[in-house]
Amino acid sequence: MWDNLRLGTRIDLHLHSNRSDGCHSTEEVLRRCSAGGLDIIALTDHDLAPDLRPGLHHIDGRPLQVIAGAEISGCHEGREYHLLVYFPGEVPEAFTRFCQRQCQQRAARYATAIQALGASDIDGPDATALKGGRALTRLHLARELVKTGRASHVGDAFKRYLGEVHGHVPKLDIPLVEAIRFATECGGITSWAHPTIADVDAHLPTLVAAGLTGIEALRPRVKSRDRGRLRKAAAATGIVLTGGSDWHGWAGQKVGLFAITPPEIGGFVDLMRAA
Image (cartoon, rainbow, N blue to C red; front, side, top):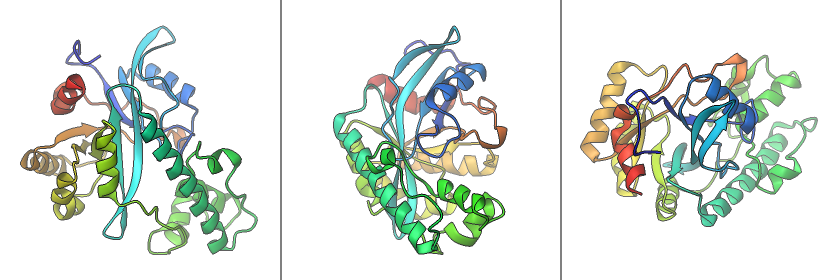
């Protein structure tokens, strides 16, 4: 995959399916990615090892390369952050088991949040989630709060009930630095997902010391000035750039409107090629 890239190859390294908080099935995500003109993608569902074979797929007669990935949640200095993990080949069994435990913890905190909200009319975790095969997120709960009339829309649910300040949803308790170290031990290439400039200034050296490989600097709606600051931070700490749309597919969002090209993430391409 990485040895014969065209300069115009269109890549998206951050996508979600309905195995976590996306709108569409894995198969439908692939179909839409192909129709949207993407060439290389990574499905990065929350705390879930992919159920999709990495490598070349043919979707409606068009080639689409799939990278194995996941978006792992962890805490650092009392706040929850997200870590993108990419594997050059198959996902190791140890990482799959780790993700299963993470999802089981997600199911437990979802049930705790329902109880804390006094929302007995909202269904608890389903069997798949309890077994660690599906990731329940704040978005799932937000949509239930809208459905049951407690909030007018998803944003309202987050504002009134689901922000970290409300304390209704327990944090996942794995430290982010431990998640970085473990993913690296499993052979993963790690990238800090959608960090703010303030968080980068405060925490990047610590995360790089733990083994962080990259930073997600190329994203929609990030100002060019801020992209420049993220590039400088990456260069100063010797890590690579990654990028992706963080596409979930709700509200008719079209995938493929945002894409990155190999020259923009040359360091990441080199790491994948060398693995």
